[in-house]
Length: 388
Image: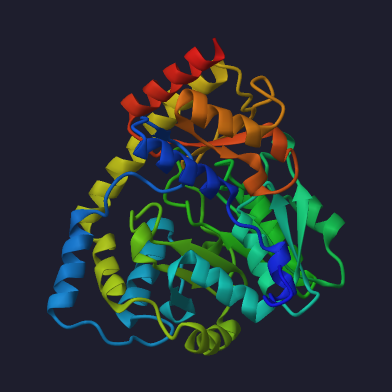
């Protein structure tokens, strides 16, 4: 920072995605004629399902281009409430659902409502990097708890009991998790909700990948308590990444505060996107989405054993999302340097652990199985050849 370019102090603590530098390098290599296999970005390769696209077109044709209420289109809030009832048997009143511009918009609102300057938010390390940055943006302090295979890379009630202080405003859990794809069991989740409330704080549960679980689907946190914040998104399971649409289920007393903040920050989520999302819950769309979920499971079952056979240590099988996070020290000591070499020398782009925190960051890589099986098999073959 130069003297004539003042920048807020918080920006020193808010880091870019390191993988974006690798992606930019990959694009340059492709422009030079190189073939790069992209396993770095957490975006499904499937297009938005046709029923959703058609509903979006119809919304535009019908003139649905004006503002909705800041809390979202009433019909969409009601559709999400029915989804919770039909999918999980969970009664979630539509009045507790706030539609947001992506899950990031939901996290921004929740942190803005809960975090005072100097307040702490507990979260797992490794974890999704934006979580700690949202806390810092509100002048709070993210508290990363080192987690590993012994707890499936998840926070536990014991972690909260050991880490919670008088400055703690909330704790955050992601299930399934990015980058590990692991789950929090229902008993632990309920215990953490109850513990946070007993301390006068809150638990925030990231369920962005909840629809992409490959075994028995666990209960949503929204079905365990009406005193929990649950974040979800239309991006991952529903395939609407570029539409920028998400939601938060909030304890009823907080809805008015979220509404008020949303009015001031972004007024409302995209109106055409909200009308399009209504089609996500139709039988025709759900059939498409379930077929894609099965395709992701098959991809995992190809890539995971292939990587393990090549020396990537993955001690906990990912049960959800579309990521494999493993110890890469058998290939090299510094995962960022390793990711650069894999890109330049093998033509395979992956994400270094440094993007997900500090704990074991230089020893881990994340692979996203967001490409079709023949592409994953080609990536494995390139890695075999590179390893010699």
